[in-house]
Picture 1 (tube, rainbow, N blue to C red):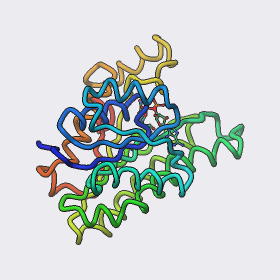
Picture 2 (cartoon, rainbow, N blue to C red):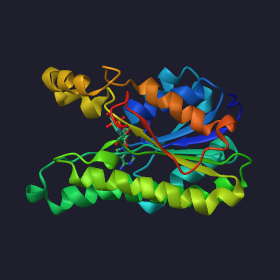
Picture 3 (cartoon, rainbow, N blue to C red):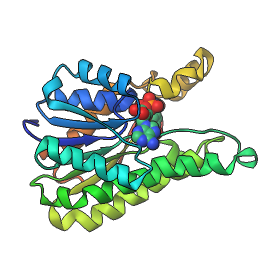
Amino acid sequence: MSFDGVSVLVTGGTRGIGRGVVQAFASRGAKVTFTGRNEEAAAATIEASGNADNVRFVAADVANPESAQAAVDAAVEHGGGLDVVVNNAGITRDGLLMRMKDDDWSRVLDVNLSGTFFVTRAAARRLMKSRRGRLINITSVVGLTGNAGQANYAASKAGIAGFTKAVAKEMAARKVTANAVAPGFIQTDMTADLGDKVADELKNRIPLQRLGSVEDVAEVVVFLASEEAGYVTGQVIPVDGGMVM
Ligand code: NAI
């Protein structure tokens, strides 16, 4: 799978899964632009990529449409066009339904779902111009199964799955594929405070008996972005050690 000169935009690349995705593309020769909100963490992502010339950071809040447009513009400038968009930026604000504050609901929907929409809309024309346009949205198995205490997050992630399928149908005539990756429990900052006991209980529910790594997710993203995956579209692919099947 060659990505030489391919222009890739990754949202939320300053840590976790997004950082792993940036590295996976950069190590294969892609021109990667990534967003985030923390300059220091961004510098660490660039350093870790081992390919600083090809990797560029742009500060952007994806929940803001102008900011999403600016991120796309930066990627087009850096990569000389835009071939691949990975909507990865996401947050949680967990709480039981009856105690969930309006702001916890709306901020999660704004970042996770509206952010995915703003970036995709800003990128759509560029993806259609590309010889190999690829949209990959990071959803979650929680969007498929639901999870107590995550009504806002589950709704945002289920929304991403429906959004991805609609875009896949709209853009298929222009040879753009749109897929979603649904990680299970992946070892990142988002899951760091689960505690050992919860982590052990989780492992018992996972047929492959381990939490996932950032690389487990990044490699599936890279495959979906490859030329070889050109006949896969409109799918939600769990990367969860077999937890949901
Ligand atoms: P993380 O919390 O480690 O990283 C999230 C990234 O998104 C950071 O770079 C952060 O700066 C960025 N971000 C947050 N809000 C933003 C905004 N408004 N604008 C721009 N960037 C923003 O999270 P992690 O674990 O790497 O998750 C990445 C994606 O994978 C998220 O969409 C998450 O929902 C999803 N996911 C993670 C799972 C896990 O077990 N860690 C499981 C299933 C899905």
